[in-house]
Image (cartoon, rainbow, N blue to C red; front, side, top):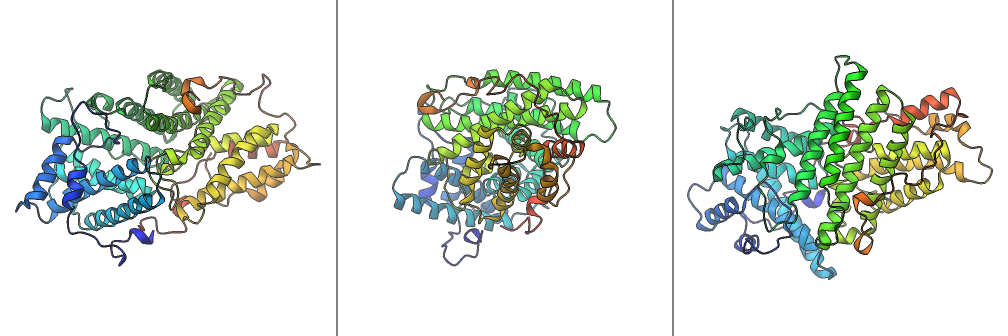
Length: 495
């Protein structure tokens, strides 16, 4: 995006984080509630960075200055994202957005000066992870993956991944553990999304055991859930990408174990969220979207190895739950962190960061059963996204979803011939790219979804579909966006 270019003449980029910014990011007393998204930079480390900048210490130049600047600016950007949720004045929101653009440009300038050839150290790892988190929140997942892989390799070269004991016994160990579990989260999630090998070696301990509880943060449980989900994604990705002809029985056993783990994670997610701060309640709905998107992936993997009408039905339930949570967030976008331009910020950790499988499953059900409620839900989601279609990163996803919606629309027109003749439309409308086989105030708790979710007892597959249409439907059901397809018409590393 042009406004984020470091050489944009409209932006006045400071040489280093200004004093006021350093003061603003200081946390209050430990007992105060802090609605600040957690990251890998502890309170103590941030204070040390800020102190070094304020003193203009001689050692703080060159690489160290860029490292500290990246960490502080990214923390400031996320702080502004959270502050924007409470601001209703258009002028104030515009000024916040302008400050965000300045901080992003300053961060990118420092990222471009960051050297990965120097001897690895913790400060470099922290700067790489902050850079990766920024790229995630800009929707630049290729850059996010590259920066995460650099951080992972530095972690491995220093043997930081070989953690033998928990909890940490010193501040330095705490810093290392925090960097490791954030790297794990990004690495496993991105590897699964982009179908690429993980960069960080497996850990000897669970990454969730590395988290140190913060009494003033309401996000501890949420962060643990995201890390648990990343572990599930990593194991599922290993099954899906296995080229050793693993027996179906072994893949099914792994999927069943992962499903049991997902049920345990669900029990950790708060079912009654009314006691949580309002902003955190909405953040949990975003986690619902992620959780059920992963459940769909587990179900689809099971179905590829052994078809079962029961699992097929559960897959549709989970797909509807995922899309239902996403639509709820769309309806309450003003309650989510970030801004609306060039697209709602929440897309970067929901729609952009997790597979589109739930959409494919629901679309198959629309075609197979003419379910009007599913079609209406799909329409509402795509219509809400269409106002941001000018952004190329969202545009390709939206074009794909709208093409599939157009495929379904004739089925609901008067005199439509029904799903039995859908095969010709599938051939005509399928993408050219090859794809391998509410509690308080209406906020839905993850545990409140009806297990049937509107499903009847009859099996989902429609026996009237001819063999060709049935095969095409199965291909669509199991579709996966190939790595690089979303950025095939643009420079994937363009900021």
